[in-house]
Length: 186
Image (cartoon, rainbow, N blue to C red; front, side, top):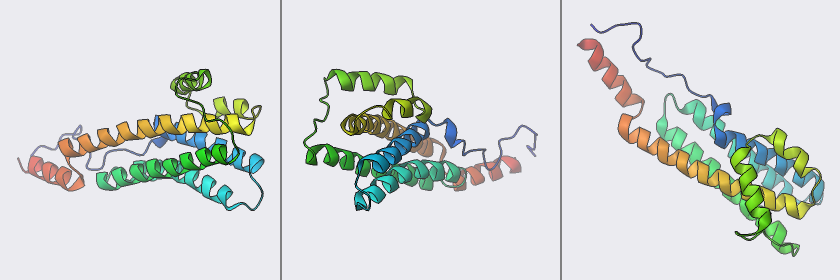
């Protein structure tokens, strides 16, 4: 019987979501959105709740997906996709804010967007972004958030691709349990 101490565990240690770059970015987006809504939208505007909830959902579904990954790769994939969809909803809210107030959305080749993209490549944490946000006008904050959401969306797409490939290669918990039972019987 193959029962050595360094056998792989049935349930691998998972759930260290704080190390995921997608989580770090989503947390920064949540903090920026909370600040933005609190300071620049009219009190009692339903958009406040919707934007904050979309930002929260983006962050929380990454956490839930990571926590579920030990027993259900399918659930992990679905929840990461929900996070992606929530951030898309938030993206449209920021675009609506700019459009309805006649503010310019940064073009793909604008100096501002290129600088923000570079910051986004180097920084993921809210502690970096919040001091920048607090000294900028709402239209700049909205554009910063749009850029961060688009970067995070791309990262979540790549994360979903990786999760899908891992599932196809290794299967889920049922396949893992079957493999381990077969190995133990040898």
